[in-house]
Length: 608
Image (cartoon, rainbow, N blue to C red; front, top):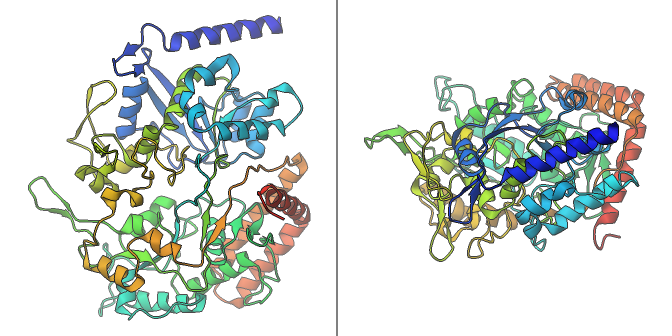
């Protein structure tokens, strides 16, 4: 009976796949075929910040191209176990890593094998065209999960892939700072973290009026830095990222590793005492944040707020520096927008002579990542119980096209961006405005689909209209095959490399001798983290339980130490962290982490 039931299920599924793009589908005459049946897909993304129906222009795009709409479920509250128990992960599933949860989903038959029923062959032409190595890397990864035939299949594909691994990705650890305030200080030398701390305090002093009011856009307090806990994992994200951007080490499990020397620095390395010389990079970074806190330079809302709360402060000039470009210049460097009658809508910071731009301490070793032909560890997959695996595969495959990638990053073709006759990539005027100010309203705009020829009125703002799954397939720094050899990254488009438009921008260029953020960061003492075809080894259930308990203690006491008012309180938090973690089998977690570091180092070509 079980065999009969399985046969009936497979037969029914095969029939649905065959019907998915049959004679009733709409052939537009352009080589594009729009499915006839409207479907609604659920996307479970462990990376998504939002949890709702996809809205805005990407909703329109999915409707036009795939006759589909999607609802996104994020992982707030750790929904994985509940969804596994309910028997449905999602139509499209995006894993935050290719570790234990991804492995468990395959072992318990919760993911659709892409070669079953020929689904990859029929609906994955572009995945196979561009990313053969990444697909086979997924098969290799899965084959390590067990000897059975089911593990010798392709169940997904990683993120941020480049068919050409010869280069490195763009920098996003950018050390953005309010350049107008730095200029006002007379460009003091910033050699190390002591100098950096001094400059941050001096910059903040410039943000108060004589009457004690603040010079931020909304008149509220200004801080050197503002953090958020949403993205914390094994460690507090902002702390480990600051350590990465200063010391040149990349995150790996419960620590950071030196890609050049093969040295692994565990999260609890050193005594942890305030100012101790033996402290590892995580404790040194944590001590710096506590130093900011004690000086009133760290936003006291950091532990309680979300990314959105921090971003709103950054947009309003209430933060002075950021480790990341996406929390710095990409939020703050706005241009003036205008109403339909030509009057000013919002006065841009750049027109006001204000700008965030990179200011890297001389002793820092900023990290960037090598291009990866195998795919990163964030996996795109399809749920086994999906009623529409064909449509899910079509959407994933389209995201693997150059046009799909451009749509994710920059919006709708012809409305937000276009190619010229020579294959050069351009923003439209409206697209440039949207990218400079992601809150730009789309209302009143009409998009004419290049696929179906249909016209659609748009609504909502640009940012909310972007694909909210929060994952990519192509690397932003890959060469765009549809262009004339330009990268996907807008900073490398010939059309987008222009003379400085504002005095403050010209000042930064004159002082640094560089014309762009990427050029400047290339001139620093940076470290490359090479790409490697690696995945974490299986963790026992007992160790996984210990692991989860340990990471909660690390995060709890990291935040406590960060807001400690004095040395005694700081040292007490660190002591409690080390004591509680050791009592929860930190030794076992560290042994696993060190072995994984050795495995990863050993997988690098040429590593000895």
